[in-house]
Image (cartoon, rainbow, N blue to C red):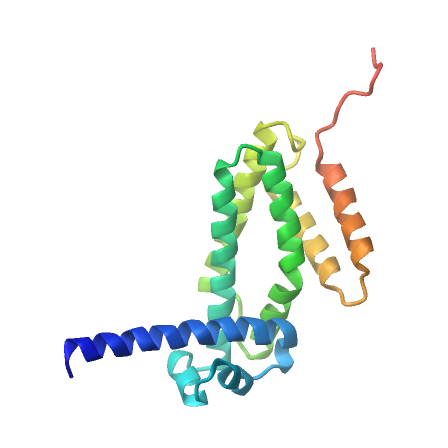
Length: 197
């Protein structure tokens, strides 16, 4: 086999892998544990054997999807670290994570249902995202945009709880937005009362 032919096959394989991951993220993000690798293969335009050549099990595919999702979110958070408005960056990214939660939760639940777990690489990718959120929080606090008596563990707990609530299928979008407003009001700096002596 020529070097050119080998390189073309590798490029082809990478393109297939990327397409499979894109489709799997959409399919499992919408269908959760009820979605199938066969549906992923069909929508990606490849055979099921191609899917399993890249990802030997459904759990391996779901873990790869979850890791890529965490990595992408971490990169988005890190890109906000140079912004001139740290408060807007922190609150905007918090809002983005909550909006993204239903898909992430569906993929995570499908992974557990497939016999996988979110330890190992997935846990490392999740920790990377958490650190990036912590860096956004720190910048917002130093800019006086977030109260300085809160730390990442409680902020992350609020983020997780709000995300779980927002992902609930019966939660009205207006209620979800109001919940975020209340959480953000609680994270705002405590200002002295006007007229206080």
